[in-house]
Length: 370
Ligand SMILES: [Mg+2]
Image (cartoon, rainbow, N blue to C red; front, side):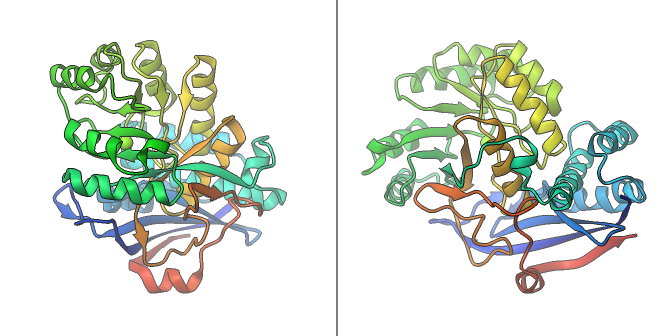
């Protein structure tokens, strides 16, 4: 079943976050941007994917439009493993972690959406998963810096029913404010510092946090590929989570072989798509490592994370960015309620975007390769 067209477009959704908007990579981050990928086949079927964007959205979109989409045209959409092998080999000189793999991830997710639609089965069923309708979610708070604001938002998230709450802070003061927040006594707290510290500082911080009962400390070490220093931080007694910034299965193999992680966090829009996620999850499970996907996304990337996690993880826990979007073309599936998300039951990813919302929030032109 030949691929006949690939479209990329950007959807920009205004949001509030319970405090002032952050800056990221020099830009004010006040819109959630989804890099949507649409793949069409010769029988008229359409699949939707999402490639990692954030501040890199322009480069990922260019990678798809200029290189990946032309390479994909005419290939068999049902041969996902063969297409993955061919495209990632063709582009490997351009980087094994970055825009080209992010871009391919979005296309690959769309191929699974197509495969499910063609088989009239949800992706979780194609992957051999159990029938369930909802999954536990954790609230992934953005960065507030101010401990009082952190505590206030942790209390609000706990009142909303979240039993797992992750902070994006870098101080113990903010962490202790979260732990002491009214309502947090019923929740487990995680701390994600986004590679903030060099190894010596990371070990000092881990030692100071060791008695605070964090469910995990995420990415404490700069740079993220310094896996042996990460292992030395883990030895300080706090469970370590990482993986959103490593390249594919072999990135996780290196983390696990170094004894660096307790929790693996593969990211479906970055790592190469659903197929690579499946390999990572199996490898982690064979090594006794928990997997909780990295998925602060708002479109098909988030939905794909639901499907894979539900199919392959016994007790899935889905990352939901704790923000309030004005609207989303994949509503209501991309929102949580009472600390849970609903697993779509329709074929493929189970949700096609609302065309009116797409039109209203589209940023820039749609690029079509055919
Ligand atoms: Mg993280």
